[in-house]
Image (cartoon, rainbow, N blue to C red):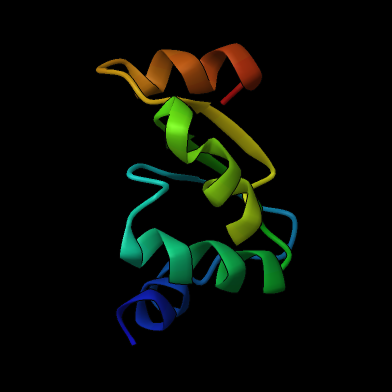
Length: 80
């Protein structure tokens, strides 16, 4: 329910990009596929052992989990 409400509250148009921290977490495991169904591109972070799981949730791009998530995202989308 929390993931569904978050998607509804964001109310982003199809084609939007969203970033998910804690990509291997329970909430992310629900949010990521819901975001994909809305036509959003999903970026998430994951520890090396969790990359395959986060990809299986549907994340388009997975960046290494670190203290600098924003820099990792900027490397993928410098324009924001």
